[in-house]
Image 1 (tube, rainbow over the protein chains, first blue to last red):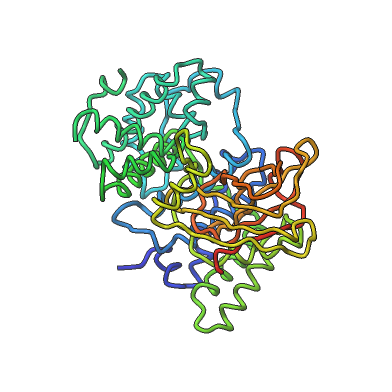
Image 2 (tube, rainbow over the protein chains, first blue to last red):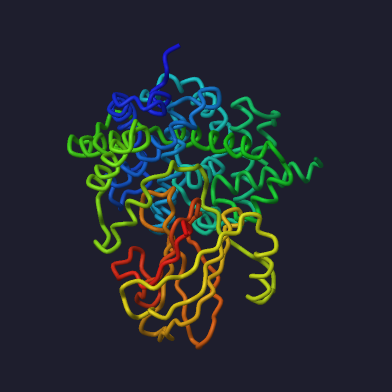
Length: 185
Length: 266
């Protein structure tokens, strides 16, 4: 079985360095632009790749696809930077709930099935619930920031985000199922 | 587990994904989930990441600029050489290369922070905040930390070339697992908080970016003072604690000289 890029990095394969940049450079730089639009994106991208290479030995293909693992590290690093440099609030994004999510043609092929399943879950949530997930999970806002900007009680925000994430986590096959009606409650 | 336990577990896991867990919350989660704790934390972050990618389509067609790609590739090669070098010379060469290709935004006096931070593999964690809770006095909190912290580390303060803290004495106490610690200081001149404040920095071997801000503090009396450490980010593998003198409120990146340091390496 062919070793993954991260497994090759963990084994010290020098050639895999450039290949990780080719394969994940676009993903990481787009996440960096989204999470740190006012910061030094190049610096953020470098921060992420250093972490990816250093954490390569922790990659376990049985637990996550390689692309997801790289995105997990990227999000963690980028949110870390976001919190360090202060919250970013995109007022345009906050003004209205987003349109229902549409499939994208740019999905990494290896993630297509998982992303479709997640979109199905999110698509079954009401618009406000979708918006909360977008603000907290995709924009990096804290529960309290999301509550403040949507003028919702903090407890409501926390419970809705929790139920949405729980439903996604369950859909990905690691827990008991819950009804969409319960999630939307 | 009871139904309320399950709900509390989900609350804590969502808190981990969105806001991060305090050390107290992390201990609570560990007590509820036991050995499954790390796996559940990973699963929820995994779910959040896929939610992020699904809801905010992230095209992968934006190639890195040639200059950035070249810089990253040099950094990656140096990193692998430093961590996989067959002999000491190769490791040393990789470390020199790492220092050369790392963008330095800090004062040259602080350049050693880069080398210190570049050596150890990063651990995965979030951004818990330290808290020794309760209405205890500082002395009682220190005693509690000394009694209960399973991994308490100590390091003595040493003066550096700058003469302002030449008489500093005392120690740092720090617990990684509790993300909490204190400074015991004496021989530190009083500061005027309206003009300047002392600021603590923590060099974390697992962070390749700036040192972690350990909070600003004042010394308003002579004799020994106890200062709680207020790390703004999770500290994973602290190597050196250092003090600078900054403008009121502190700074994000220090340009000032180091006044004193306490090394966990002895």
